[in-house]
Length: 321
Picture 1: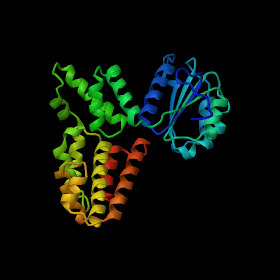
Picture 2: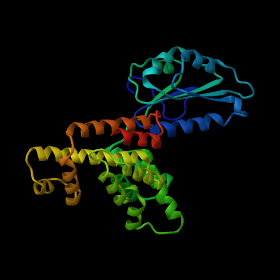
Picture 3: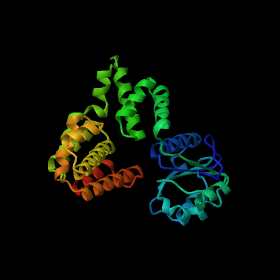
Picture 4: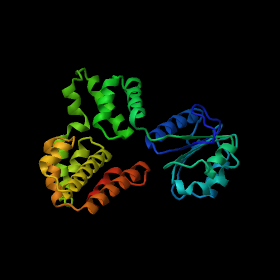
């Protein structure tokens, strides 16, 4: 966040976390809560408040409440919708020295946000966790692999290549590989490809075969089986979005009069994948494809912002596409 002081290490009594990268917001909040709860001697000293529907009066009451048995109180406000943050600004104007306040936001705030400014004025800090992509994502994965999972940067780079750009998915795949290596087995290239989400190509192909013109009951069953096998629902949605985007591009080429052979020669995907998309595009509607991509995007955002359960949301998504 520009024009606001930031502190990425220790904070005195209040911290506001926001940004598009939910995984990093959650990780920073857990580290902060672990630090602040070390001095507590009872459960009375810690209070969690859900951000959805929270009023300024309710938050102010929690902030001003004096500790009972503990030297201080920790108040954790979890995932406030961005459009409800400014209404909470009056509640944080006075933060007693006996209160530690952590607020996380389900999205990014602008530099003029009233709650952010009120936190800073009260002596706290505001931190933004931006969405990682490109080189920043690769560097994060390499550092994560080496420091958290004792894996090489090369393995991390491979995970990034075959996984959706979702930190929770990438970290989950790194954990899986680390757990396999901990058994004493060697992580060969074939083993890595088999273990990673990207290795379930047969099931992914079966799923995409059942998406158009509308998802079949088999699509729902396949998606559920993929989640039971350990594949993240958002990763499945990402692969679905890739398929819809591919079919949409092929559809545009068909409408320009290009033949299957021309499309296969000009597109980077495998010829068999392009042929499947070409067949699907013949009976597909461009408007419906674009609508499906928007629906998948909305689902991914709702999951990341904590508005819907990932598994249930995927079921609902497949019934609406």
